[in-house]
Amino acid sequence: MARSKSLNLGFLILLLCLSAEARFVVEKNSLMVVAPQDMRGKHDSAIGNFGIPQYGGSMAGTVVYPKSNSHGCDDFTESFRSKPGALPNFILIDRGECLFAKKVWNAQAAGASAVLVADDKDEPLITMDLPREDDEAAKYIQNITIPSALITQKFGEILKKAVKDGEMVNVNLDWRESVPHPDDRVEYELWTNSNDECGAKCDVLMNFLKDFKGSAQLLEQGGYSQFTPHYITWYCPKAFILSKQCKSQCINHGRYCAPDPEQDFSTGYEGKDVVIENLRQLCVFKIANENKRSWAWWDYVTDFHIRCPMKEKKYNKECADEVIKSLGLDLNKIEKCMGDPDADTDNAVLKMEQNAQIGTGSRGDVTILPTLVVNNRQYRGKLERKAVMKAICAGFEETTEPAVCLDDGIETNECLKDNGGCWQDKAANITACKDTFRGRVCECPVFDGVQFKGDGYSSCQANGPGRCRINNGGCWYGSRDNKFFSACKEFGDNKCQCPSGFKGDGTKTCEDVDECKEKKACQCPECSCKNTYGSYDCTCSGDLLYMREQDACISKSASQVRGAWFAIVVVLTVLAIVAVGGYAIYKYRLRSYMDSEIRAIMAQYMPLDNQTEVPNHSQEENHA
Image (cartoon, rainbow, N blue to C red; front, side, top):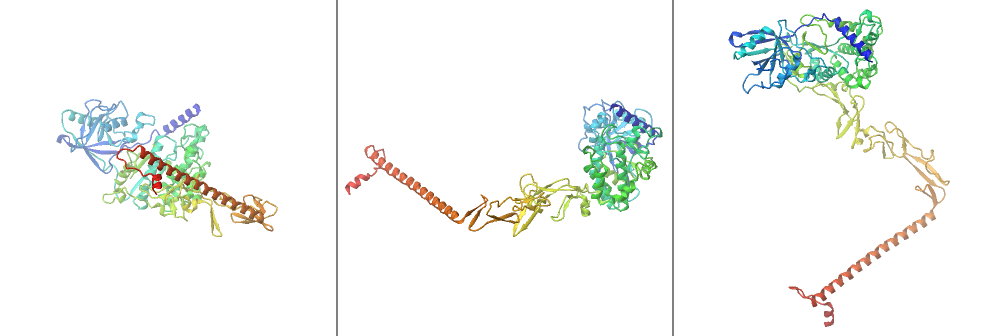
């Protein structure tokens, strides 16, 4: 296993070497010094590839140079939070000794509104890039929300001298020209990947796709944007085509490759699995675009991530086909578009992707994932819905911005067409499709106080009390002779169970059990059995009567004698109860009389203070 990992790493290094001469373009914004007067003027600065640049806007602030910790590699002991009514503070930090992201993070924690990093060498501006996943800064990179920019060494020395001399240096960071905005339509592209097991960066990408889907679809449906997805692929050098690495990571005989998802050839999925799914997603976009439904790509990639994850071993063609069918896309056309991955020929779709990786005009080569390009300018900043929307909206000509750029409360109304590919019960008029500003989601609903549970795509089942009120809980039901029979149970495990007298799965079928034919009733010699819906009737020959509890026939006289004895027992029981009750009453009254006589005698011979004399009944009788 260790050898496989080292081989895979060597292969990745080789691929990186192949693109060593890639053309990088530094995305810049303008930095204007407003005061002091003798320093007024514009300077270029390189936008940091993290945080949230204020695309389409500008930010004014006062430059502050820290008295200690000038590299910003440690926590600041002083606060840079601006006072109410004052301009925001922009911290000026020296380059070196730690990662760019760590400097910006420490400055943000100290209250800075923006960060200017002064280069430590005389060179052209570079992009302050993201840290590697194993770097210390990677753990907080997604929490950086302030903008940052790199300035030249010479300009940095001028700013530091002015601040040290006690000058109040006011500057203005301007991103309004960072994204071209020539007309009322924005063209943007996202370089993405279907691999969902590549760590934190994959998680960020997948979360962005789900969160941004609604806004993207609204822009597309309104004709405000033209979106194009792209996927990076590499080729395997001819000398290594027959190697284990190329065979497991490439298709079309080494022409199109992707790294092994687990970085281990001995387990899990292979790089070629990722290439094939990337190709499928490109063809989904192509076919959907031909059908004037280009926004369906967003539904496919988000649904595939939810329904077909690698960790559940569902990252395969079968699961992908189910997603495609649920969205009403032509599966045959998509498969034809994909072609044969084993053929020793170029794939037209992937060949175009490799050509598109090479930068043109103001856009550099695409070498990292994810990469967002707006109006042919590479986006710098946090891959987050509101930040990306700000960059896209900056690409519209002034006064032509659509309402989505001004309002977060949007709905895409995807559920109006084919129920958004979600589960629904047409008979009960219930659906798992829900429109939100993030796009439609498939979630089992709460209907009439009853919670439905399931995956929201292919199944939702009523759960708990009240479930039988709604379409009989999805269970079988039937009626005959004004009697209703149901396999739905309100309580228990919510499973459908055929009622007594029936057999079946309880969901689709419950067949009447023929107790007579199966000899489950009326087994006495004198019995005659007749099956009824859900039950049975037994009759006896002659003057005999059928006793269901004993499954036996008895004579009417015996039945009458039994009835007479039962009546006698009932009468005797009633008389016994009356006698016991009468005796209890007699004892109570006798006890009460004796108590009153005793009290009278006691009062006569031992009178109490302030107690009236109690008459003696015996004396009254003698006087009489």
